[in-house]
Amino acid sequence: MLFHLDLTSNVDTVNLFSKGDTVIWPDGSNEQGFLSYKHCPALWSLGARPYISKECATELIEDIITCANMISSANVEPQENNIYIDAYYELVSYIKHLFIQYNDEVKDEKLLSEAVIKWGWFDLIKRAYDMDDYDRIIIITYNYDVFLERILRLHHLNFSIKGLDNDDNKIIILKPHGSISFTHETKNEKETFKIRKAKDMYEASLSNFNLKYTELNENYLINALIPPAGDSSRMTYKWANEMRTLVNQELEVIGENDKVIISGLSYWHVDRREIDELLIKLSVKNINTYMVNPNPPRALNAVLTCVLPKHITYTSSNLLKGVL
Image 1 (spheres, rainbow, N blue to C red):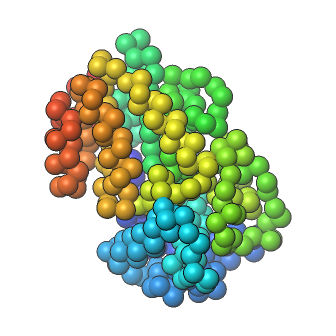
Image 2 (spheres, rainbow, N blue to C red):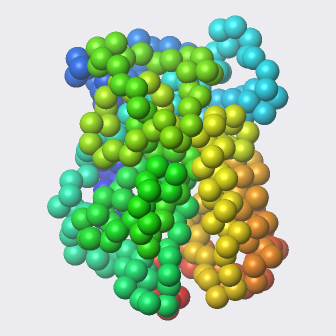
């Protein structure tokens, strides 16, 4: 969507540190520089800078998440003042507010434009929504942003966020890695904002979160967000485990007349196990599967052809017009 709408100059999802000095510290002071030694000393000490390359940024995030995954899956307390674990908590908070800023950058007018209507993914969802052939459209997304939800709302396509929304609409969205729209029921004074660096400060059930699309920069007690390359199956957060259960329930009811379409998809070693679990469940369904990705990872391409015998890869969402 970002490339299709020519938004990549303002919204950089490849190098997550490149806009770090522009992100506002959310204590009401309106001070930019969230990614700084002042606010994120562990991240900064490990080398996070707004001017580092995307390769260096990716490697640093991978190191931090690998350590967090290991500590979580081992179920042991990290050493006191461990810089990687401190950096993990800083990364979670920073990414949340980075994507809130990105959300503010993209105005409704852009999402209502003719370009969105011509976008292959919107065209696919709209046609499936209008067709009687499909009872439900299930979207499992690992993105934190709410661009999809905003587009659906603006174009009057009703949806539900499973786990947080009780409405039963044709479009069901699940977000296993959380979202900037998952806001905790406890909200503190804005000027008291700080990055909480303790595991028990991130534990909550899905029922403890509300679904909101405004006032996202408020000082909510707990962030429901797992950073890029994070593996929710290793994280012990209750809300993430509950969301994974809901995802598995949806996969169980997929039938042979259904179609599965994959958009992009990371396949790093640090989140591969979670993706493999989904693919294994799909492999026994004998269904048509598709992936849209202009440059898919070689390993993922190989795995998809191994476990999904009716698989097709497209390089552009424009080719989805023939899928339904």
